[in-house]
Length: 57
Image (cartoon, rainbow, N blue to C red; front, side):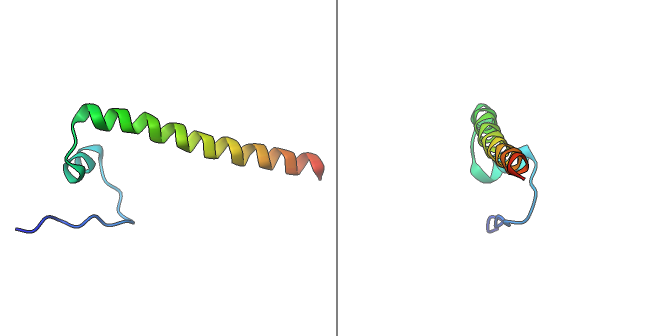
């Protein structure tokens, strides 16, 4: 049986992601806070730009 292909628009659970990537639970836990930090950085940048735009308006 061939391995299932990862679909880019599909949402996977943590368990499914671990199975696809073949990584340990501790690795996935470490990766998740790194991703959260990146998402927060993008959100903060967007928020700051919106704030500055409204201030200049």
